[in-house]
Every structure is written in structure tokens, then in C-alpha cells.
Amino acid sequence: MKPTVRIYRNSQDIPEQVKGNNLFHSRELFTICERTPGYTPLLFVAWRGEKPVGKLLCIIRKSDRLFPPSFIRRGEVYGTGEYAKGESEEGIFRLLLDTLTQTALSQCFLIEFRNLSNPLFAYGHFRKNRYFPVNWLRIHNSLHGKSPLKCMSASRRRQIRRGLNNGASIHIARTTDEIRAFFRMLKKYYASKIRQHFPGMDFFLKLVQAYPDKEIGRIYIIRYKERIIGGSVSVFSDGIAYLWFSAGLRKSYSRQYPGVLAVWAAIDDARQQGYEHIEFMDVGLPFKHYGYRNFILRFGGIQYGTRRWFRFRWNWLNRLLTKLYI
Image (cartoon, rainbow, N blue to C red; front, side, top):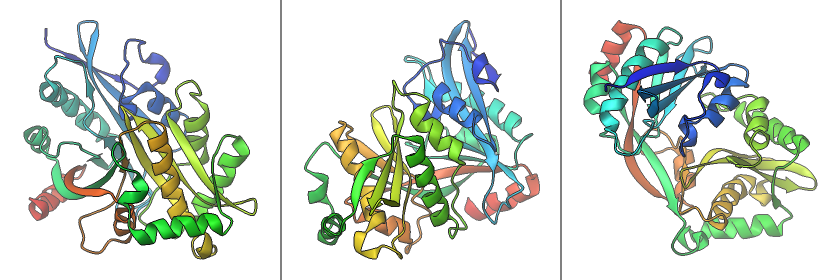
């Protein structure tokens, strides 16, 4: 029986049998985004009869970048979905991709597939739907071998030690007040980062509080004299920890190294929880000089190449960029 694709726009309509281990294509992330202002999630599920055999979550939001400008809506997909065992992943993905592209382009200007574990997966299907690839980089740290402290540079270990000795402390945000204070710090930090995006406060509140029995994410805060001076956000999916956001007020609190401690908090906690890897999301284009990527690599991570796929609504712009990147 050939699979058919159904589209879900409301979490209450998603059947109970649609389950899985991949947070980025889950009912949980769908619900969190559904309750976050400015976000519109779309879940595409492939069904073979009454059995779900594959799913793909697209999150549509307003852009915060200069291009496309802020009034433009963009759709983001993390990875290439989740599939039932024994199914042809690429064959089902083709059906999901066809439906997603047609549906999402009617609601947004740009679709982006990011965080691809296999950059060669479904290359022909992406190109058939007129996506174009851009080379990208990923970084992850292995946590199942020797101590993460031994893997990082000596200067990074020294900064962690000095930051803690100079009065900074690491905590996990539990209360609403702590999450709100973290959000204000994050907003202050990201205000100067034109090309960066972070969601509204509701996203972080729901991430920590909506599913207390599953703990799909944690917020780490760096305190100094009762003030939050840094922090980070990790989410957990299919046995891997992902550092999604991190920030530190390093100019005001340089002796406490809040940005360094924020990343270290996520790495150390992921190891203590038994995760074998932690991946750093959005480390950027493969430029020779990129500050955030170089900052992350000093924690001992491994860098490897991947790609992202883009599709613009305007066909002339899509053709132009395709010629530039292929």
C-alpha cells in the first residue's frame, strides 16, 4: 500500500500513535512552538493504512535577519525526519518533501533544511523540488571517552577554573523567575547579534515546564552575586544533547568568563546524564575566520562538513542562487 501524507496544524489533532524519539519532529516540540507567539508549526506524517511510517516537522517563523527581512516568514526543518523501522526512509521522505514544499511555500518566503546528519541523503529529491545546497559545518564533542576537560585546550580549562574561583557559579534554571531572568540576559546579549535569532520567552518556559516527566530540555544559568550573567539551553533527542543557545555578558564580567562557563555547563551536565555526544547547533558557514565556531572548537570538539538546503518562493531568485551555489 502506497503511503499518503496528512498535514497537522493543531497539536490536538495529532493521533496518539504518532510517536518517536526525535525531538525535532515530535509532538512535544510542535506543541511548544504552537504556544510561542510568532511560530507556526506544521507536522507532515506519512501513513501506510492506519500506521504512521514517517514524519517531518516544519516550523514557520518571522525572520530576524537583514535577508530575508523581518517581515518575511521562513520555514525551518531540523534534520530529515523520523521513520518507522523497516521502511524506505528516502522513498517516504520524497513524499513528505513534496507535500511540505508545496504547502510551506504558500505560507513562507524561504524553506531551510538544517542540521543534516547525512549531507548526501535525498540529494536528487531536494534538487527535483528546486532546493539548492550551501556547504555548512557541524561540531560535536564525544563524551563517552576521556573527560571533556582533558580534551579541551589548556587555556579553556584555565578560564573555567578562574571563572569559578572568581565567584561565578553554575545552576540549572527551575523556576519561572529564573527562566525570565535568563531570557532578559539572552535578549540583551542577542540584541547586538544582527544575524542571530531566538524565540520569545514562552518558548523557554514551555521547554522546561511543559513536560516535567520527560525533561526534553534544560536551561543552565551562570550567577555572580545573585545576578545571571550567562547561560545556555540544551535539548535532548534520541540519545544526543544539543546546545541550542548560549550567551555570556563577557564585557561586563570578563573575570568570570560567563560565556565559557555557559558552554561548559551544558557539556558537563550532558556527560553526567550519560549522553555520548553533545552537538553545537548553528556554528556557521565554513569561513576561515568565524568567531563563534573558533570559540566552540577550543572545548575539544570535532568539526566536519555538512550542508543546508534552501528553497525560495520567488523562482527567479531561486534560479539565481542555484547557479551561484551549484
